[in-house]
Length: 207
Image (cartoon, rainbow, N blue to C red; front, side, top):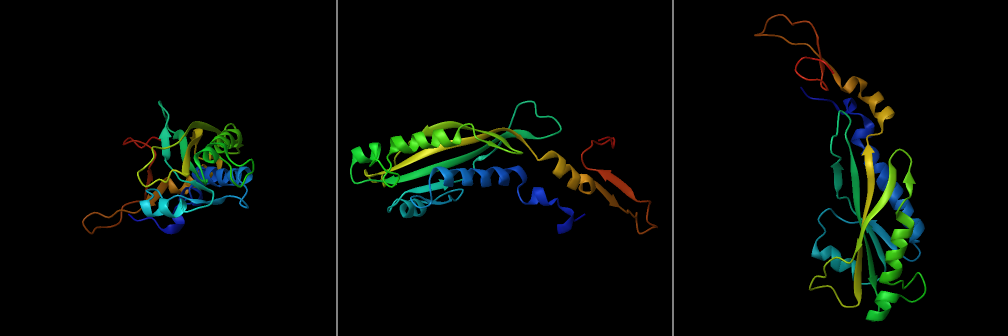
């Protein structure tokens, strides 16, 4: 049995709470790191050396990716878990001291300032329908051989804890999606009465 495009709940198709969290995170980052001074964008799921080379050529960048949705222990009928978004700040400075300490302005911020800004703006901010963001880690990822001494990458693990699907809206759209009607025929005979399948339940038909 194939489902038509219209059978899929729009919220699930469009990412539901994952998309909500991502959009809120991007807005928060643009507040913390004004686009006038920082270039914002997405980081590919598996960024290549070419991508990093382009980012490291100059300027200040804020890039967001997606790591996953890890379920909490004891998840029951409703899926709940931690949504993780890796974020990277890319800096370029003329010397090592400036790279750490910065220039005293947003344009030319250093590793110390960028790290503090990530922690101050991201940890604890709340998104309606998603929950609270927690900064789990702020690190300088292991330097590759191709990383110039005047460049730095600050990595952040931003996590929305114990996130569930957006219940009321999704359940409303799932009402028909989870109960599928079919008409069966056996060996070319007359069609049997319509059967209603509850895809949430077990083999005994109970939900």
